[in-house]
Length: 483
Image (cartoon, rainbow, N blue to C red; front, side, top):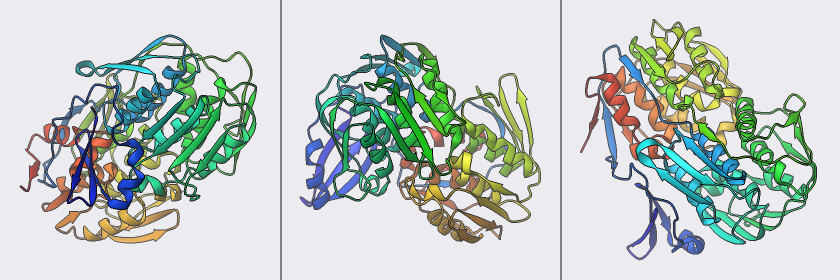
């Protein structure tokens, strides 16, 4: 069982999912009733024995020297799960990420009737595809706070025949999905936001995806478009998808297309503005090697920048299908030396200067760059990332609040922020149950004593062993518990 339920003081539900805990009020507990007691078809996580304290204090490090290979990309893993489930035959995913987000996806696919097995010792998953059909005619899916899972599976269940319900933790009920629902309805299915908020919980009454033409906004989340793209080949007739307005995070759409191509589907498109699916497109099973996670890699490159050390991230190149490798270019603009080596990308830190950058295409690295900016000799301005207000937390306002605690001057804009370095302060950093907040701001502690991270366990969402790997890389027992 991956999901464990218990009651505290008879007034709230305590939900533990593979080492991560959420607490719900009595009212929220009633809303989660459909999920209680649902069984998992997936083997529990290999890292389920990882129990972090409520706070972790980071000890300063000298110049970091070493190499690291982060776990597999979350974004690629979850896209590969969907394509493999829709393929004909059995696919083998190697180097897949084993974390809360991917486990939620795998568990949900299991509840939909897909057969997924895993060998945790080698990060391999075997997925038996169902050739574009859904085995289950109805299901209640708990997606925790996984944006990729709720958006991708909302689209996927429209291929079924029956009623499907998707919900998650309280923050999930604040994350937008209305534009995706509108686009799916244009393709002949019936989806709705149950509370009419444009956010989950989502109800889908499916009778297959008819096809036709759909328009979707591009300025909220590229995951809406990626979800439509992945189910497009399985519609009953031709599909045309048009993007309305500017498209954020274009590299993630390009990643989706690359994963689909690896499973045998090549999509015709007009500069990522219009996509066309004709008859005869079918996913085919394959063996797929998943790249290390480039967003996770950014933390270790940033550690080199902050400490003026040198870190090699193995398994990634500038030809990776993940746009976040471009983060290294930002560090180069700040003064770091960046080198593509045969076995990975190496960053060597030098005295840092501030930059003015548009991070729209690599917005998952905004928090990482903000941490580095605290050590620069001049201000840094980050633009074009208004959409990250809709992530696990508001990654502009909440980030600004924590940077000010650490001593920085911060000017907040609708689509970004300006960070002016100041004398760094002792602080306990709140993470808002946001894995990227925890990992990024932990790096500040490598250059300034007294930085404590609250709720470090939220890193289980995408990188359960992050603090272990950071400790191993710094060679200075930099991570200590305050308990």
